[in-house]
Structures are given as structure tokens and as C-alpha cells.
Image (cartoon, rainbow, N blue to C red; front, side, top):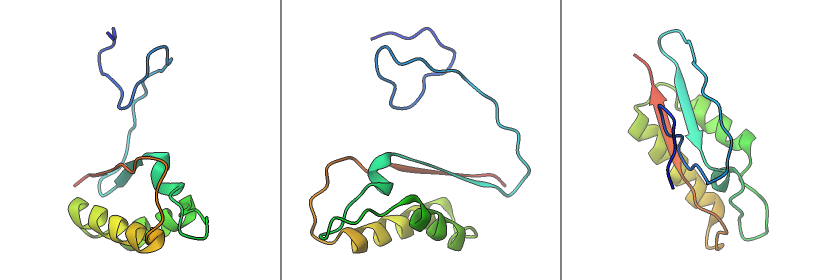
Amino acid sequence: MSFEAEYMPIGIMEGFVFESQKLNYENNINIALYTDGVTEARNETGDEFELERLIKIFEETRDMSSKEIIKTIINELDKFVGKASQHDDTTIMIIKSK
């Protein structure tokens, strides 16, 4: 598979159309990139982790390092899921500005 783009998006699939955008931001901003496997992770009763829960954790950890934020999210996700098997990957990336 080859792409003729200046930057290759994460998780690109053949035939997927994408456009690039620039993001201008102030200092001290945190950005979370994640796959739907995080918010759609299910516990043993079939409830999903959901975006609202992820946002709450992200807001509560805003002053932590990227590594600490990811560790906290993964720990909360593991507690929520318990022993339920998952149907998708869980990928998280945190970007912090200084």
C-alpha cells in the first residue's frame, strides 16, 4: 500500500479519503487520541466505558505527565472491564504542550 501524502495518518486503510488540518492552540493544552476500542470497551454486564467516563478521567489527570495520564486511563479501563473479553483494540496517545 502506498500513499502520496506529506504526512501519513495513523490507522489509515486503503481507499480511505482524508484531509489534513492544522491545529492552533495556546500553551498548556492536553490532547488525547484514542481508538473506539477504549470508549466501546465493555464490562461483564455489557455496559460500555463511554466517552463521558474517558473525558472525566482526562480532566481529573490534566496536571499529570502523559505517562501518568495513560497509566490512570488504562487502570480505570481495566477495573471497568474486569474479566470481560474485548472485541477491539485499545490504543491511547496523549500529547501535552508546555
